[in-house]
Length: 125
Image (cartoon, rainbow, N blue to C red):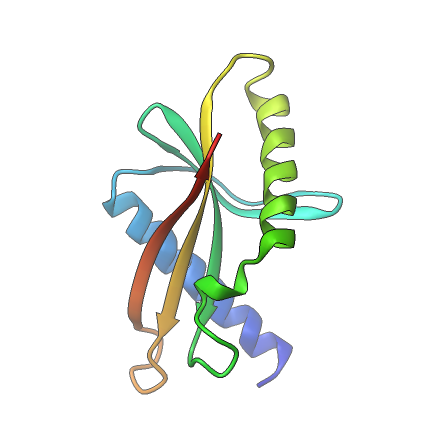
């Protein structure tokens, strides 16, 4: 599978993840927010705080489950990027926030339909 195909699958996964988050009560504020050294796939409001969301999309388990692909280094990068977004958008006001991961498993036999979408709350700050 080429890079273009992987990128397209990732985009579909982000769309499905955003749909699932909205259905769970999140309000999407931004997609693919970038700083040097990091990117946040989705930024959302959830209740009284913010969720900085990493979306992992897989078609099979050859490389493990989608959620298992988010390790400590990735979480640390997300944490730094989230702190930068908060500094830029919220300033010094104390706010509740956390990093979430949305695991999207696409069904290879059903085209672009997801087989499973799971929202994981990783940690709250």
